[in-house]
Structure formats: C-alpha cells, structure tokens
Length: 501
Image (tube, rainbow, N blue to C red):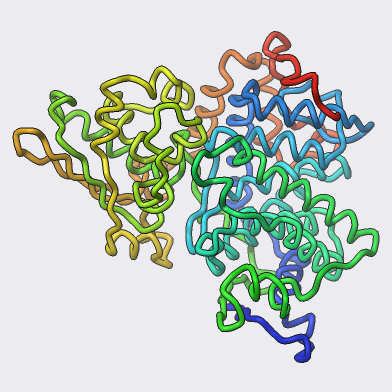
C-alpha cells in the first residue's frame, strides 16, 4: 500500500493533476489488477446480502416511495428493480435510486469503520444497475464492485467526515464513480473528472443521522449513487468538474473539512495490485447500527445470568468514543430515549437496543422495533437505567490499524438492587470475520432465505441463488436477469397520489 499525503494547495501553486488524490484514485480504477478468488466470492456474498435486506424492506414506506419514483422512468433494455418483474426495465440511475434505498432501509447490510463510518455495500446498487443497462458481464461487475469497495474503505481509513458533521455519503460518491469507471473500462481522465463531480455533488451534513432520524437515512446513499451515475455520464460526454476537488484553495479540505493546516494520509494500493479491501469489511447478523452488533451478542449472553430483569438497578456500558457519541448517551439526543421515536432513531440508540436484547435474549429486524415493543413498560424502565461512557481503552481498540485487533464492542456492568454486579465484555460481534462465528456463504444464504421467506417463491429464490453464485461466468444477457420478483400479492399501491412522477 502507498500512503498518499493530501492537503490544501493555493491556486498559485498549480498542483499537477497527477499529484491530486482524485487522479490517483482514478489510476487505481483504470489499472489492470486481477480479482483474487476470495474477493470474488465475497462480492457474491454481499450481493446475496443486499438482495436479502432489499426484499425484506420491500413494503416499507420509503422503499415504496423510491420504487414508485423509479417505475415512472421505464427504459427498454435498462435495469431491473428489486422485487419487480425482471422483464420490466428502467433507467439505470432510477434503478440505482430504488435499489439503493431498499438495501439501506433496514440498516442490515455491510459496514466498515475506521476514521469514519461507511456501508460499502451501498456501492453495489448503482454499479449493478449500470452494468445491466450497458450490457456488462458478471466479471465486469465484480471488478467494478471491488474498485468501489477499495476506494471507499481507503477513504474511510484516511479522512474523517464525522468530526466536521459531514455525512459519510461524501466518500460514497467518489467510490461509486471509480467503480463505474472500472466497470465501463473508462480512461483515467474520464474517471478523474467523474470522481470530482461525484464528490462535489454529494456533500451533505450529518443531520440526517442526528436527533429525530427520518427516512432520509435510507435515501441518502441511494441519492449519492444516483448522483454518481449522472456525474459519470456527463464526464463520458466530455464535461469537466471542479478541480482539484480535495486540495483546492476553496474546496473540500479547505472549507468543509479540517482546513489548510491539515494533512490527511489516504492509503491506496499500488497500481495493478489486487483490490481486496472488501475482505476487511463485515456484514450484520442483526438489523441495527454496526456498533450495536457486539453489544446485542453480549446482551443475549448476559440474559442467562439475570433471573429477574426488574431487579436491575442500573447498567453502565463502557465503550469507544464513536459508539458513545453516535448511538450512546454521549450523543445527547433525547429522541434516543423516546418510546415514540422512529425506527431509524431507535436503531441508533444503544440504550434501547441493549434493553430489548437483554429482555428478549434475541433480536429481530421487525419485531424488535414495533411501537408496541418500544412502549412496553418494563422495557422503558430498563431503557432509562442504561448509560454509556467513553473509555480510552475501547477508543484505542476501535482505531487499531490492524484489522485483526480492531474492536467495536465494550464492557457492561449491570448493578442489581441488592448491590451485586454482573460484568462482562465483548470485543467484536460473533459474525465478524474474526468473531466467534464468522459469516460464511451458508450464513449469507440462510440470511437471504430467512428474510425473503413468504415474499418470493421457491422457484424465484433458487433462480437468484443459482445465478449469483455463478456470477463470474455470467454473460450480459444473464446479468440483466440478476434480480428477484416479489409475489404479486405483496405489491402495495402508491404511497401518495400527490406526487410529480
């Protein structure tokens, strides 16, 4: 890996294009690296994972809204939309919008955490949509997805957006643009311009994940993917972009991030090296913010040691800065303690999540979030006894550069009314690659079967699983049918008659 130093340059310095981060990313996207076997198999795993959570969210309101918007933009030989008959095709940017929203809605697909947060699986919907519309092969798609993961993971390692309250989709726009560049075998210059446009148009604030969290949390990455598709299209037509987008005197680092005095270091592979950052990422066993995964596993374990939940006096969770300040009491969001809060807010409240997981000894992507569940008196009582604390030890583990040592868990101390204490800690989730029970292909398939059960036919799930597991051999005509149709009886009507599309 190379360490790319990135800082602000005055316009008068006339920073060479070849020395700019966007160009170096574009070089990676246009190189001749060959996919490794493990990486190819992981791409297949993540497509299965995305499809599972997309179908499970099929009839949630934001997903219906996004789908109805997309269906209003049909295109012969276009792209498919999750849940819709594969014979029907739509403009790829709108398919990316609908599928990206469906994938993100339940907060249930993959994650990568480092200097910032990310869900690299958000790269898949726009890259898949363009691959279908442009008649690409399965191997073309694999290469594009591997580039998307490579760029997003390494941007997340090097540049923190969260400290400046910028949403993490600002890393997604460039990674999708780079992935599309690889997919379509574009020239380095075209990819360079595309990355810059995609970044410029996907800067937004983290208010989408703060306070009363709305459905925009699901729409945001889909929007970034759609904008990236459009940026690549413009640049393929010969259009340019704000440059240099990272290092410019009035650009991203200078006025959105840490300013002229800051130097960022972004790791990138050497040209033509295997792109294997996807292997550093991890999926979710539970439908909740990733930093809650290990703590849900710990709650399941601790339940066995508590005879009577009502005898709990208080619960203290000692964890990393990020967990404490994003989903813990350090966020200072009263909504995280509100039984009437939205699902999007509850899945970012470790106090709520730990209370439910401790009471139930399990977690469910629907049942654990119902209004009835959130308003249960015993749950509210327990919920209000939970407090998180930042612990330097766990913050250091969170930021460990070695993937094998990086941790996202914490220590829990449960104090009972009689003064006895129950203590335990967990470093990583059971399903993590280095966890107690790492997810393998069989687990991805089981997750798919579980989440799509009753929504798609056995014939449909067999067709999809056969296609996707032969991805590297798929020709363009087969890739166009890499989709799943939900049984017609589950198709709901429009969310609103009052719309533009």
